[in-house]
Amino acid sequence: MPGVSIIIVNWNARDPLHNCLKSIYEYSGEEDYEIIVVDNASTDGSVEMVKKAWPGVILAENPENVGFARANNIGIRQSTGQYVCLANSDVTVLGGCIGNLVEFMDRNPRVGMAGARILNPDLTLQPSCQNFPSIWNNLCQTLALNHLFPKSRFFSGPFMNYWPHDEVRKVDVISGCFWMVRRKAIEEVGLLDEDFFLYGEDIDWCRRFHATGWDVIFYPGVEVIHVGGASSSNAPIKFYIEMKRADLQYWRKHHGRVGKSGYMVVTLLNNALRVVARTLQYVFCPPTRETARFKLRRSLAYIRWVFRF
Picture 1 (cartoon, one colour):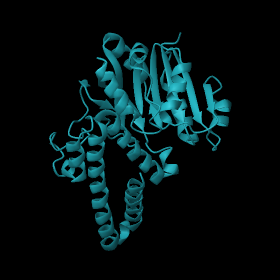
Picture 2 (tube, one colour; picture 1 turned 135 degrees about the vertical axis):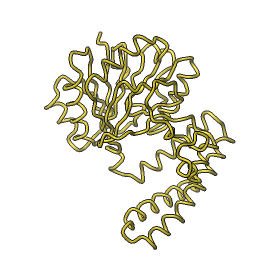
Picture 3 (tube, helix red, strand yellow; picture 1 turned 180 degrees about the horizontal axis):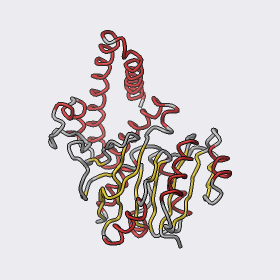
């Protein structure tokens, strides 16, 4: 039985996946692990690349894109490690990360889930911890109060950008791009909720870990690099709608109809304000018109989707 099962879900992200696997083999040293890649019917040669370049990887090929949560569950069911590490295909694992995270969890048996310090490709901090969603913190984000008062916890919105991510800390939510999860905790909490096709499953899972009494911990003693958007860049507007769909699903599951309706009002306001802002940007800032046009199209697509929802 390996100490760690590393599970990577992939959809048309061949090159980032190659870099991810390369970093695991280069920087994980003598750690006792197995690697499972779950491919969601990629058409970019990802499967062929894994078979050729990384024959030691366990490969699960789905005949269709079954979504992120379900694909991770397929990997978890096949895994045998005491710990399960869920990593996005666009993550680069740095030296000592997996082993040190395992040692930390061994020393702290009530930690059910732990997250690393996440870095951007330029090695700047990528904030990876969140508060549980609320109407207030979403309204702060809608009205840009988190930008007006960047050091304020009260106006921070759902993200903890006011905090430098420099200490071990219990948090509500850690980013789903890189998790280390105790198998015993999974057996108690249950697998990821497969009703979430893409996005939202991380917030839901963290909430269930808290509800079951397991600690969710941010541990800055280890670091990974996360590029972001390796799969979503294939269809950014579609993925944006999926993210909002998952948010509504989360609110309906944990806060009922009233909570979901309140969140929908806030997000409609958010995107309506963005339509106005991006229109003004397009008219008065010609050098940024391409960005403004894309974000305008994205907000309009969401508003149209809500009224068809």
